[in-house]
Length: 87
Image 1 (tube, rainbow, N blue to C red):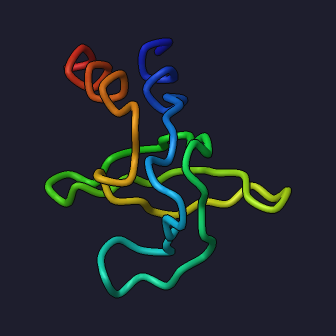
Image 2 (cartoon, rainbow, N blue to C red):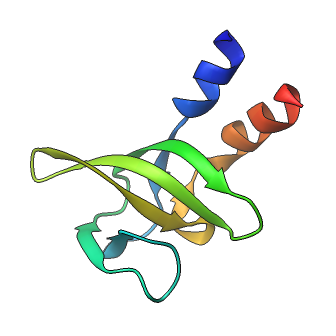
């Protein structure tokens, strides 16, 4: 159980400035917030086969949940290692 909890609490960062946090994966998602480079993101889970992650971020003093593409997130290695270890 501890391992699973740590997977859901993996902390990573936004790679580039002006990264859109969306309410859904892909082009159809609406932008919830625009994130700055280095902003911490808490990875909730990965969507299998889509290269998309459900994340929690803090922006403008509020906690927001949304989706980011794999390419927008730095520090995914620990999250992915945790997934493989859990298998």
